[in-house]
Length: 105
Length: 480
Image (cartoon, rainbow over all chains, first blue to last red; front, side):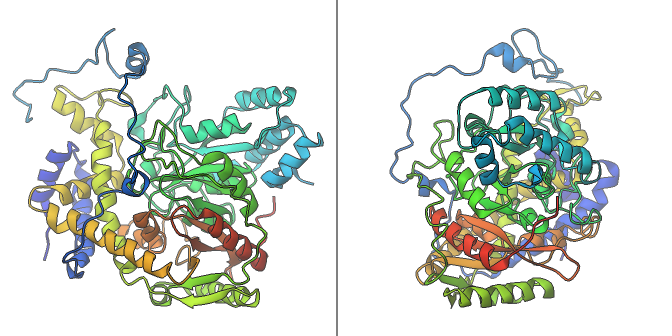
């Protein structure tokens, strides 16, 4: 039973803000369907009453010792950060218009 | 004596005794890069002038730090201020980070010389270093074969004498599997042992930086420099950092080595099985006690991993959007276009596949069925290891089910590729320390690695057992 079809992929492309190239759609649809079928094997595991592990930090920060003092420390200079941007003014990142007939978000 | 083949311990001794200068050590590595890297393509970037300038400065200084003059290659997903960092992706095109990863800084502060940045699977997603926007790295033992991955460039560099030391990152086996394929020692320390500050994140609850070396002793020497709490990484551990060389000479006599025979049974190629069985016999002769243990949920590690890792990746890779750094599509007319077209052009197929899968398992209606369930299975795997460590000091498994495979052999079948990591993934899910040590060669003459896994923060015991494996295996590295 196939879970991943073209419609699901189109929805995921929209959610993840990634367009697939036309030649990628068919291959990736088929591969993702197989991968989802593979991870379906977890449905067979008895997990009743088992707490989920949310991350590894619980092990590290058990004592709460990594809660740092709440003080402001200098970060990177604005100019240093903007230097890496594909498009920027002296103060801000610059992007194309946000509202428009092609905009889906 | 060929300088490029010296271990870190030998380099240190020679440099301290003034038999060699840091420049001799770096020139030997650079000469080896000239001789081999046209074929192997381990490096994405080598700045020869900067390497030689730094080596000359170290030669003129009186300091004798732990890694004085030792060349180190850095996987290109770790930031070095002012040096291009690509993650082997087009989407970072031209990015020069304004800061340096703590792990790199610690090595540099100890006198190491960064020799270059190494190739990887894009954003560390892969097991063969074929998913690089800059082309694959080749295995120096046989250039028709993959070096493993994702840290394949770093593993190949150390194997071929192009650097005495390299750093990699390991999210599901990305240090240990290439170490096994390339016949070097590669270690993923306990989650939190090494700061991840400046490592471009793939899956934050699984990622860990670790070294590649040519000996277990070298591994311990480097961990002494690398480990420790970092205020820039709130997940880095403040557990005391011991002297990792402490138990190297203790031998395996009396050590209880746990082997999960049932887990091992289903997945292993004949040459790997043969060398693993020989290793068990040798360890017994040395006085180790081989104990059967079970990891009943380890079989589900792969599925749990592909949910958890890709869920985290889909969030972490959201930052590559064409706004703040790297590539932006020139076709974009609106803000929405900037996101979707930049990411279409910038990401390769494997990254797209994983981000879409991560998006799927986190999307409305599927969260409990996939993500939460995978985290529950993660808990069961952590418990399996805890139970095993009640009756043994270290767990022993092959690192990978096969020796190095041919380039192109698995790249079109993601699931076949993922099976490479079946023995390494449960360790990341449990956050434990593990090292791959060469333990034999296949009939074709390819290296085979054994993996030793320890309790959290017990790298000392892992390294003691690894030194034992190294001693009984008498593996010979690639002639340089």
